[in-house]
Image 1 (cartoon, chains in turn cyan, red):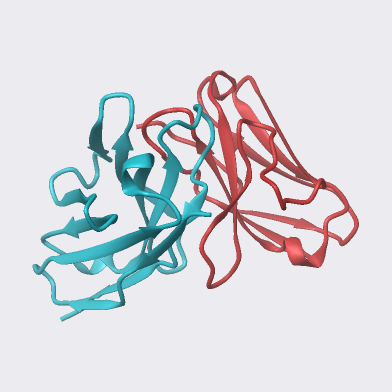
Image 2 (tube, chains in turn blue, red):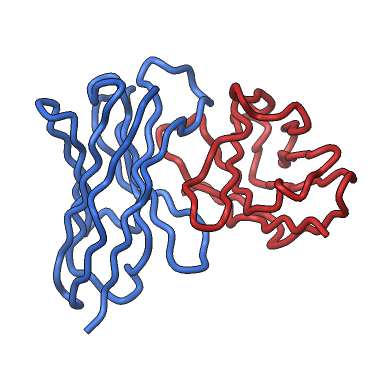
Amino acid sequence: QVHLVQSGAEVRKPGASVKVSCRVSGSTLSELSMHWVRQAPGKGLEWMGGFDPENGEIIYAQKFQDRVTMSEDTSTDTAYMYLSSLRSEDTGIYYCATVFRIAVAGTGFDDWGQGTLVTVSS
Amino acid sequence: SYELTQPPSVSVSPGQTASITCSGDKLGDKYVCWYQQKPGQSPVVVIFHDNKRPSGIPERFFGSNSGNTATLTISGTQVMDEADYYCQACDSSTGEFGGGTKLTVL
């Protein structure tokens, strides 16, 4: 059973950056494709990016490509999502979500973190 | 990016059948997943591979996908099924979601 634990809530001013972590237990990061999903207050789910096992790289949604960096530390089984140049519209809950790399296509995101609230306000 | 369209809301009476659609260009050529999200909780996958249920998901949840439309059907809808539901084209490396549908059971 994969368990994902995310870092705590953050408050940032516009123009600042934030780094959210997601620690994996019950498996290892190298066995998983890690993805990040954002949810603005009262809004829907928005895929930000994630690991593509077909080419072994992290790919980003075009909307976030210029401001987001996702990384992984396999020594601690912890993934990170770094978002820069924050603006008020970036306020929301950020989720990490995983699927096993060996899973066949169409499996979806099996496991989700509890979410991290990021508030951007002056 | 690939766009998926869902109705904003669907209402159903308890015990009746609820149908939530998700449309996209040639969606039937892709795998579709469905997620349930209740207030204050993380999403949970209820359907993957168009029509498969993860263990623990009740048999009343059924998925189909053909042409340009995928459908999540909940038969004998219960009050506990009231939630937001999101479709996702889940066979690609990307993971775009539909806009979500609020299911009201009353």
